[in-house]
Image 1 (spheres, helix red, strand yellow):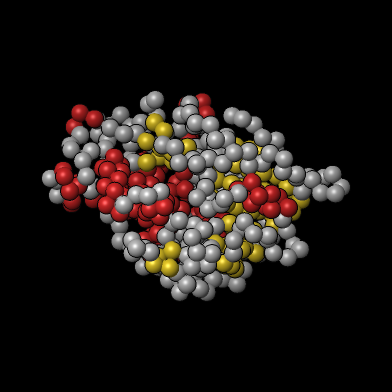
Image 2 (tube, helix red, strand yellow; image 1 turned 180 degrees about the vertical axis):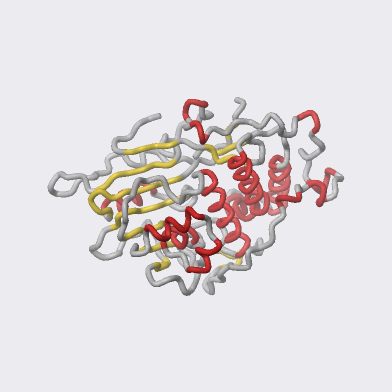
Length: 355
């Protein structure tokens, strides 16, 4: 599902006629509801182009991974690459108001049913893996907008809160374990006040003093007070909003003069490497959300490995409520999930989702 015309007819002027903010798109989800076409090599910056690794496993040595594990006859430990194994981080937060569905997963209780992905420990691990994958895609960065010393920042649909935690409010113990880039970011924005909002309260219970987590619905009228934001960030929220245009409208209305909105998203189309409309005041950068370790670039290879792992572990949680609402039986969903996992392991498939 790609969202159409998200910024069309959105005013960016105050009463004086001066622009109150700028917009920054990461990715191509503003192209409308037309069928997505595969990105061309010329769509990418050179460092973003996902070139196929000539040393990657060739299709002629594919084992029966196209079959679900239960039918392939291959032991699970041999069928699943060892580097995809990952222990839970153990840092998940249990929300007392969560609702347990018939698939055993927990979902948000606040405005129950509005969002169809889980909020339990497995989903929190997936969100953190996706964050790591996103940083690899952005070459270690948390954002691309050219912001300068922001004083007030908002992260919509913050999930586990890992993005605002790393943005500028790291504790000293985290700084010691972080990359030099994160340290630089922490030093760049120590005075910044950061707010993260989400339907689920699954963020750390005792964040640093300049970080606040709020349980809030971004599609409802915003009530953050008269002070505007210098930077508003939203990432992978295509599953979150019924009316993304209204959310962006509120973002611009709550943006300081000269501030930035950075919106990073994708469609759910899966395109193949084998196989734009322009909006005023918007910078758009097309990237590939690589799925699987098929890229020549070591950075994109690792990104693809992490992304595939997050999908492998959580395909059922990501699809269960959606498919149940569409009338699928649980056993049909499990069969779909098994075949989806098999495709993730198929070296003949060089897949990505457009970002």
